[in-house]
Image (cartoon, rainbow, N blue to C red; front, side, top):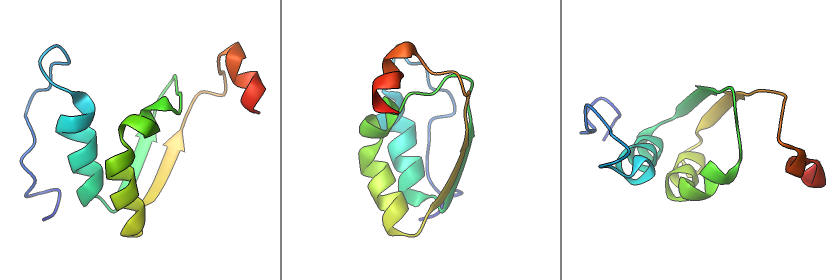
Length: 79
């Protein structure tokens, strides 16, 4: 199955849907490339999307992320 044939909801309201279960995991499972630009980034979303990311990586997927260089102070412990 490709992304073009994947049946995703046209609208995802986070009050009614689980964004990771209903979008990120299925999309990453079938993707070969993932480009993402965000102003605020924390790596915790990777844990939530892990099932899709594992499949994405296993099939040779390539990701590019553009993120803000400003991270919360608690991140200093991990740098």
